[in-house]
Image (cartoon, rainbow, N blue to C red):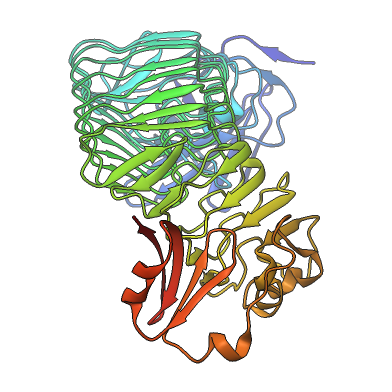
Length: 509
């Protein structure tokens, strides 16, 4: 096979017996090159690889000009995709190049994706638009890094560079280490996406912005020490960094955006510093090893799915000074502990007494096996336990079946036609109520009385006569009355009072 080690062509001409050429309309194939006319008026062409050329291309020098059939000379101004060239190691560009074709077939950095061994892109020093430093392409004044060849293992970014352009390192399969100068302020979207061998990053001390998917699927990264200068991290910025074991989140950040650390499978714990105010949808979703997360007083908004599918999450620790949230038993609650937002990830879970509402998808994707719901709960959001494949038992102590909020009509699954291997235990006198209640009736053949409450029953003729129905915690009807204050005549203890459309727990002293 013909192997070309170095091709230097100052101006291609016709008539050479050693070069096969063809002209079709506005294209001209010459050796490994395919030239396409961009402008007849300006006499400019692009250069791409000639797909009919069968030789291997390792080192190539792009000419400044080419002579088409008929003798017309054109200037080469655009480097097109130039692929496939899986063995290409260096490419040298003339001073006439004014632009690159970055994208093809949905791939936004074709040079790294199709040229995995490319070590250097060299540019004529007289080019007015671009320059190269150690084979890496920058704009002329070296303030923006544009393309880093995917065959390099280490890149040191020189002082003066402020921006790492979108897709500049994307798909670079060999890059292992990047050392940023402290002048770098922005890393744009997808800049290092799918740099699967990237092991080490030293960030700029003045870095302010990290774009969407900037480090997505960088499987080799094991730690992130983000500088205190960072104020914005875009959605999915570190998505699927599956070997990431440590994150230092800067206090200069105010919002942890959507899915920033989603599917970081190896992350065991996270400490969110004071100053963070919002944690967006899916921020830590699917972090399977996450066992503990610590939240500061400053957090005021935690969106649904922030910790979804964290199947080993055991502890959510929140500052006692937080005015909006609290924690108990590894659960994220509102401040007065009446709403459960997110539950722990596995084993047996006892929801604290006093909880009135269980929030939307609070246990989604967890490894919880058994859940005990206290009598104080009056409503449960739809899909609270969706994707809880290990869940086998729910004990709900509420005498009145908690209402199931949401359009799906079930707290367990999207697909109500699919049976689940799940047993539900409720107060003995309420079994029939649960079997008929919306959201519970789907499981009517798996609803049983809580052991010890089998003999308890509600007299339906009595239960509908008064405004208030009062039960003991074991589900026994103690009083039916129009006057709620009559509860004070009962013996000391804790009772469940239903009436006026509410259910609450009352302590009689």
